Amino acid sequence: MTLGAGPADLAPTPAERAAWENRGWFVREGLLPPAEVDALRAEALALCRGERGPFIDWTPPRPGEPDADVLARYLALHFPHKLSPPVRALLADPRLVAPVAGLLGPNVKCMQSMLFLRAAGAPGQAWHQDEYYIPTRDRSLTAAWVALDPATVETGCLWALPGSHAQGVLWPHAPHDDPRFDVVPGATGFPGDDAAAVPIEVGPGDAVFFHGYLLHRSLPNRRSGAFRRALAFHYMRAESLLPWMGAERETHHPGAADYRDVVLVSGVDPYAFKGYVDRSRPHARPPRPPTTLGGT
Image (cartoon, rainbow, N blue to C red; front, top):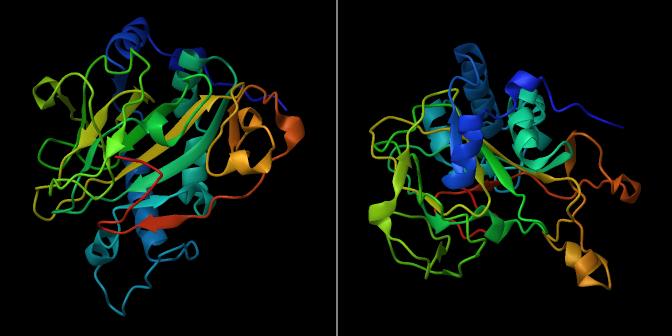
C-alpha cells in the first residue's frame, strides 16, 4: 500500500525549511480552523470522561463533576488515537503529514500521539529532547504540536533553545527538585542556559513542527481558570528501525529491534512484511507522575 503525502502546497516553504534547519522548529499558523479546534476540545473532554472507553489510570467522574475538574485530573493522555477516531484522523491528516514528509522524505510513520491538558496551576516539564525517549536510528524524529488553546508564556507555552538540535547530541537526564516542573527528569550538561531560551507562543489551531533533538521545555500554567490543551504527534522516516518500548527484547540482535505499533501515514513502509501490532495502551499521566514517554 502506498499513501500520498498530501498536496504540494502543504509542503514546507523555503522559510519554514530554513527555520527547521537553523532553529530546529517552525510554526504554521491557522492549520486547523476554529470549528475543528472546538470539536477537538469536546473530544478531549469525552476522552477524559471515559466516553471513548477507559484507559489505564482513568478515574471515573463523580456524578455532576464539573468538566473543568475532570480535565484537570490529568496532565496528559498517551496514545489517544487508539480511542478517538477524530484524533486518529488528525494523526494522518495531510495538513500535518505533508510538512513532515517534506522534511523527511515521502515515507513516514507515526508511533505516538499525546493529548496535553495542562490546567491552571499544573507544572511544566523540564528541558528534554524527544529523541531521548523515542530513539530513531536515523535522527528523523519529528513532532507536530497542535494548540487547542492559547499557548502563551502565561499559560505554559513551549520554550526552545534555538539550534540545540544541530549537534545531534543526546544530553543525559537527571532528577531535579525544581517545583516548576513535573517529576520527569530533565536534560543536563548541555551548552546554553535559560537566558537563551525562546518562547514559542501560538494560538488555537496553530501547529509547531520541531526536531527530535531540539531542547525544549514548558513552564507552569499560571493563568487562573485557563487550560493549555494541545495534541502532539511523533513521526519518523519509515525507512528507520525504531528500537523503542521493549522492542529489543523481541530479537537476539539489539541492532534489529523494531517497534511495530506504528501507523504508516505517507508513502510505503519497507518493513511492512513484519506486520503490525497493537501494543501500546492508552494511559493517563496524572498531575505529578514518573514517566518514560516524554512530552511537553
